[in-house]
Image 1 (cartoon, one colour):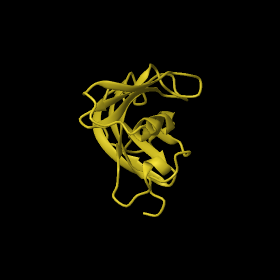
Image 2 (tube, one colour):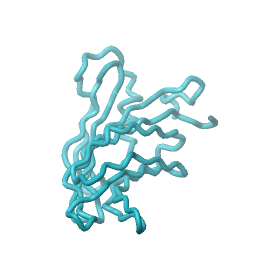
Image 3 (cartoon, one colour):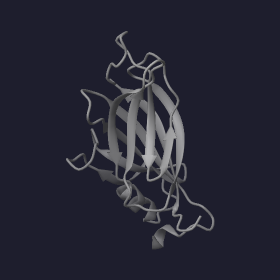
Length: 169
């Protein structure tokens, strides 16, 4: 756990208007989250262009400068899986909110708003919010390298005993 800053839970919530990759005008999508050497996968949702995954994937965070990539694939049985687009996440704005040292705020308290730009994959404004004693950020991401599709995720920081303090990272 050397140089470990903490854990980042990514809730892969749902897909919106994903690309058709199967011959039956549908797809069997799943999401692969890549962060440095770590690679985690959501479950497959069969025959659905608007899947509800609601999968929680947890990553170990050592370096805040490494981007997180989400890649959506269509699961195929007889051939290799088809790529359905990707999006990149910069976690630094979210981590700045976590480092802010806020405590005991009312649920729904807005900590920070992040605007869509050419340098991120946000579809709309993303808000860091105080919920249930922690800061969470929901993001609606536009997939790149594909004709259509979005993925909705939520970020949640998990402190670890013995990890480097977030205030000194």
